[in-house]
Length: 211
Image (cartoon, rainbow, N blue to C red; front, side, top):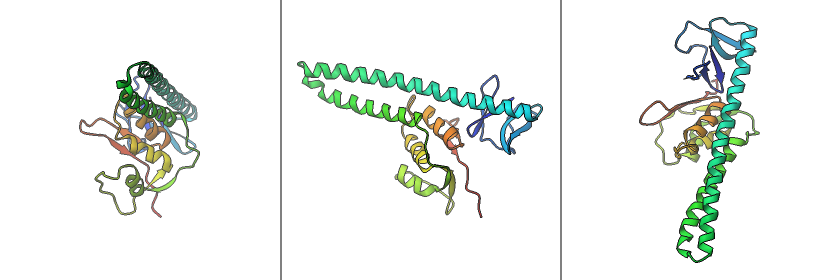
């Protein structure tokens, strides 16, 4: 079966990914029945039903929590390594190697970047999801990016998470790139990050229903 993790689906037990989550977009390998709980799609299975829906919701939440904990562990390990390297360079610079001051500055910047990544992964935004003008977010996070947007395009989400996701798209490096962007997009915004293309990535977000 497939269970919902944020805005996408994950297969059990293979852990393949499929998305975005949509009742009209079943995963491969079916036929599947859509599994919903309180009107929300929570999975796909050979047979639907209330017990199956509760199981899918529980498994999906568990996978989401595990992914966040795993990423925080990786980020924390890299942060500690960066701090140790900074401390050693600072010690050597203080005791007769002033040429290392430039290295100390660069390492301090790296520590700051990794600390910000840990914060982004750990802190849940307090503001509720609402309609946010996508163009305004892109102007703030990717001012030099080329974009073609429908007039008045509005997506559902928290503005802080949207800005964080699009800003970090520019830092596509281990730990602080794809895994962190995926966490923000998939679980905070209930969107879908597809990094399958060789020349970039696609981000799917929930649109604000038109009135």
